[in-house]
Length: 514
Ligand code: PHE
Ligand code: NA
Image 1 (spheres, rainbow, N blue to C red):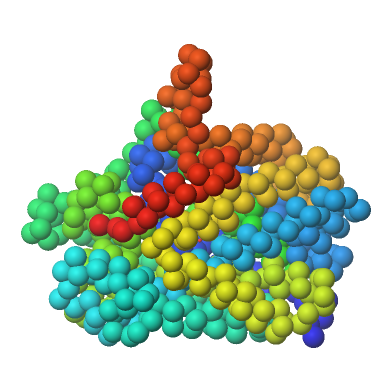
Image 2 (image 1 turned 180 degrees about the vertical axis):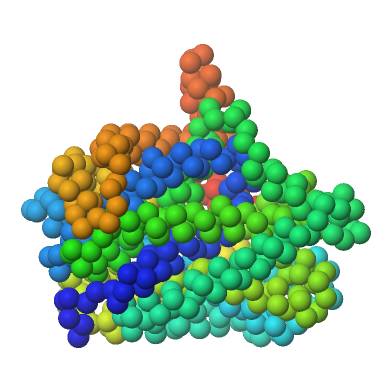
């Protein structure tokens, strides 16, 4: 059995593991789509403000809470919170920090398994000579498990199981295994990312293919990076920006607490937390915006992107665009792109396994093997509905509850607990103990007042999300006596059966991507 004093092998290992936890599919698949759907340059300012006022504070709160709990031999959020507020029922809030991971891992590992399969298909030349529609249809038949016209029967299920076995095996090796994967995966991810970004930036300004002679790779970048102030008053853009910050930094989940619980009590967190956080932001805003967007803009044009922005761009469009480079470079492009996504994914899904393992160890003294394989089995059971009913909106349901709502709820409670119940003076001392940098005092006040207030606003905002996400229209309607119409995606409406049914119907309609 692992000893209670297990800890990270080195500082580099810790930072890469934490950065690997944060850098994930969210950086490459979610960020560009959120940015495009929320007006490009209009999204960036709220996004950066949310990073400063909620992202960094939550990183500090979670790193500090985790290292604090670790001193008492605790490795999961219920126990870590218990060590901070002895004897109070608040520790049950920590259950969020286990549940969320299991539910997110179930659909996250499914996408991760697609990246494995797509590496295989890119190398074996499956996409050679396929039209854009052909590549898109390949994806549709891939996720339509029973149909499985991609050659291997039940291919999606097979890759999903392989992916889970791989995750479970690495988890069973403990922190050392996670550290090793991060040390190999993160540098490769950055290398692949830089190569693809350079390709994106050199596609030029005059239609990379004769298909759309006006297409211009730089249009995509200009769209993202020209700030627009008009949307600063649009609550919808702020909510989307905050949601992206939570998801991308992996805050509000419990994974950071768990990783931080293995930091030695006297080691720095102040510098490490921002280093890992900034590494994630570099990969997100630099690499995340310089691959899909300029490459798609170069071949298909900006209008196409704005119209088709979605998750499918990565799987339904990229393999086709790579084909324009000739067979050899297309195979390499596919290897780099899906390989990058795979490393981004696995270093994050490993993080999602640790809260469960830590809890089973704290509560039942389970060893690593038992912890890891029970996690794998649980994810398999929870994930099969997303695999078999992908086209029926199950996936979106998981993402909504686990990947969106639950993060905000947990982040709100843990912030209040840290700054007001544990107490901000104690909290500040904890953040600064062993610190290798001086954290600006301003953050003490941000963490105490600004972060919790913003989180409460966002929580209320998602409870009462108005119809069509039209905030100004609904405020006008409210003040003119016409009431407030809840959106089907608002938590309140979703909690009623009708909301769920309508949402699933909508998800099914939107499902298939151009
Ligand atoms: N931050 C990861 C991403 O950007 C997702 C993640 C969330 C990982 C929560 C671990 C925990 O993809
Ligand atoms: Na991320």
